[in-house]
Image (tube, rainbow, N blue to C red):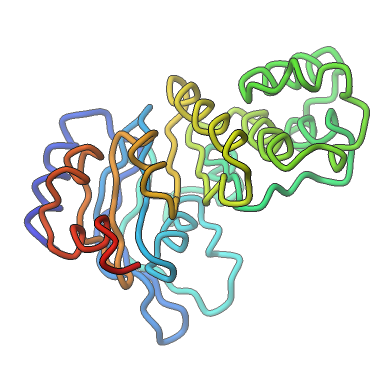
Length: 264
């Protein structure tokens, strides 16, 4: 691991660390997809993961709420802590996924009403009272900045919404179970520029309450929204630091080559 990453993780320890990753390795069978990843993800900040396709950023994102558990022949070693608790050794996967929510690349609303999409998680967690569910649905849609657009359509199918609306609905559905961390895997790649802008504004608003980790292919997006940025290449974490510093003064030649468009 480079001195750059060590120095930056040391700096990050001075701030409130939400997720701490130490020497994380991930294998698909014999193939090693992640190599010795160490980084501290700060609370109430947006951390962007950038790098070319196949570099390991989405794989790494999925380790943060153990989505890789659902795939065959995956083995993981190293340490990954949420609030100082090891998520692989000391935490139930279902409990973890309640605390660490996920928004995917393609909007994936359930074939149900808008209301039932948002109420789905709270109902699974045992909330049955209509008044309580009404309150959660409104709060979550407001947090996702889409209440005003949907408040008169709550009992219509979510599948009738535009792509951008569907993605904000999926964010509301994630927020309904009150996670602490929200993972976003290229949440705007399927959206038009106006919808993308709304999601970016929303992410900036949400970090007041949540810790956000976002995978993006769009380096301008990382610059616009992220407090810290991690550059991945071939399953390795090459550089991780304050976003503006990483883009203005990259410390590794490979980072510089990627952000200036020499490859990727």
